[in-house]
Image (spheres, rainbow, N blue to C red):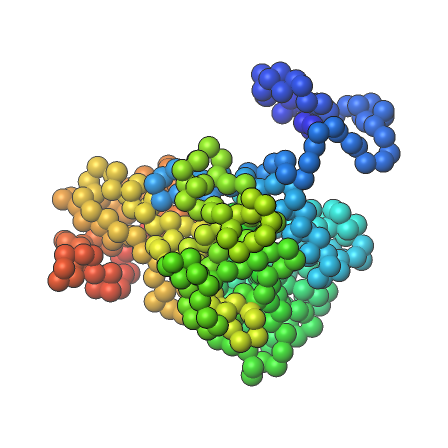
Length: 413
């Protein structure tokens, strides 16, 4: 079924003609709904394995990857969340995640199928701690999501006296430092904090950890927790065999939430979505995350980072190779390397190092990248070097890259 309205229908008239075999409902036409049944609409031949959505993640070759998730995966995730956290019509969820980020999936649909209030934050509001405090108080928000780095900023700059209504805060998107958990427990003691983990390739989240407990017992590296309903987590070695308890390995995800694959990227799908040898379900598959982890004695999983050069900054997954490829395409640039530096604790930033025959203006480099990449993938700092530092075996020596100076910042009035 296609839902549309006047401006969209006019702009997409040709596409709508091509999908004429599907019902099209014009939302501007109130009469269009008059004949619809009051009970659930049933359309023939639809199953839980049909496509629910495609959300794109960045690609190291410059080609974004569209992740195709099915209805069964999304519904499992939502039903688990309701069983675990029991949302009621008295709750209010703040929807503030951009819909190109898969956290928005549960922000939209969890309140809609439980009868809770769904409050839409203003555009770009998720970046403004002052505004967030105001809307939490005005709308009596009880549940919202933060990427850990943004939670850190909110705790430092938000008006927490406005947050008396908050019952739960969900964190995901990047590692949650124990220092942030301790500050949260001190500054928002009436609220619960929950650390969730999951890639776009497995319908939002597949593990969960409740950060409750005495402040003095808070671990420095917050676990990502245990698998949620109908999900399986494997920590495997290079031979695809499970590693013993406490031993580091690569994290694989099995179960109902594993995505269908990458849209129109058959080869990449084969590389990342593998047959699951540990499941007795026919045609079961598992997703190779590229994350490094280990099982703890209590059965929770500790996340230890990435096994490649993919990083996360403020919850957004970034593959550095893509930025480097675009930067080298700038006419004056000869070599380039992009790294994520954390020279101050909790302040992870993208830094571009480059060599050039003639040193271009930083604003010109930024403008070049902004034409081809979203703003969160554009480095904050640009450092010009005569040559890139190399190790004795001729490889790039990342540890020898210098700390950026003040003039490496782009400036604007």
